[in-house]
Image (tube, rainbow, N blue to C red; front, side, top):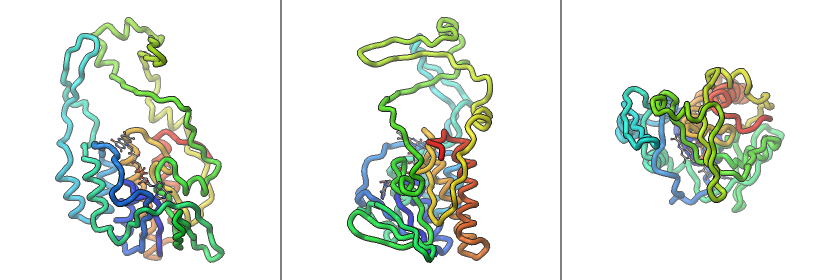
Length: 302
Ligand SMILES: Cc1cc2nc3c(=O)[nH]c(=O)nc-3n(C[C@H](O)[C@H](O)[C@H](O)COP(=O)(O)OP(=O)(O)OC[C@H]3O[C@@H](n4cnc5c(N)ncnc54)[C@H](O)[C@@H]3O)c2cc1C
């Protein structure tokens, strides 16, 4: 079996390691040059991301990641904008650890020299009569695979061709958000001052809103009730992972790596003859829809 992955991001590279360790022929095509581009410094990796890395990467790579993560967060520092007081609260930290993003990327790229092809911008694919998928790149290159995986991020060109009805809508607005748990500001008198209505201030085209938000139902349970995963789409030897199919502000990297782990396990089963390739992709897709769209905000429906 040969798998072509479009995109050498967190998900695509995690998948590439896992497939190679399962003995599956894999090629990753990345639009950027090998030198890459800056993508921030810190990434919060939780148990989903770490479990995926442990399942897919060689042990030495995992040891490298684990050795270079920040320590567990045991307390949260809060600077009150009401009285300027700095408070430290124990036991309320978000589970997981910080990793140095460029370092994680470097670890993920290590030993994949023969797998990742840089400067290769995917443009289109075509499913052929024999069931294989042919892919084209901007520089005229082509390749053929048994399975095509779109791990090419939020602007995914694979998704645009595979699921053309799915739209990413840019509202043109930009927002900087901050939140404090209500209990952290209870003693400040702020919730009482604001009441149930948002308080807003307009300053030179920018609006600042302060509001009290009390959930009547936990967000995961409400999301399960009100935001069902999108309807299944037909299974073909083409699939998507990570930001290419679901958006999760703040933990999309973890979901991308988790998708990679589940897809790798399913394709490895197909490789061993336990499942047909389409059944493997269908199994992965069902799991990804459940995990990605119930724990993340759905980017769009199909
Ligand atoms: C400021 C910021 C902070 C964040 N912090 C966190 C965090 O703490 N924890 C967390 O879990 N997540 C975090 N995220 C989200 C996380 O970065 C993404 O969800 C994650 O990178 C998605 O991984 P991916 O593999 O799906 O896609 P990406 O990492 O976006 O990788 C996609 C790759 O595909 C390539 N590509 C795109 N188009 C093509 C094409 N046509 N042909 C070939 N290659 C192509 C791109 O160049 C890119 O390398 C943060 C995001 C931002 C913006």
